[in-house]
Image (cartoon, rainbow, N blue to C red; front, side, top):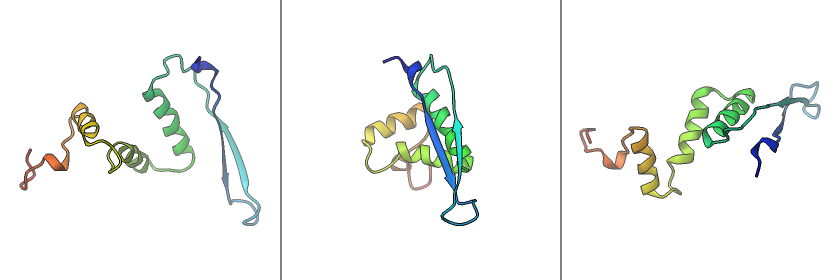
Length: 99
């Protein structure tokens, strides 16, 4: 698959019109070369989409963490990511907060 052929179109709607049934439609196009189409590049695109939709940076970061650290994930995979980013999982902390 040639990732450069992917087009992403997102239409954001809000209720800023004259009534609740009349919405303002905002169409924003994100364009990127994506020649180095890695997961980090995709997350940067979606981070900008969420920011354009009005999400604060801390909420976006919490959402990203929830993708990694939740009860549906394999604990060993969560631990690998935690290790990669020099994080300590609560399960590996002693009662006094030290590892």
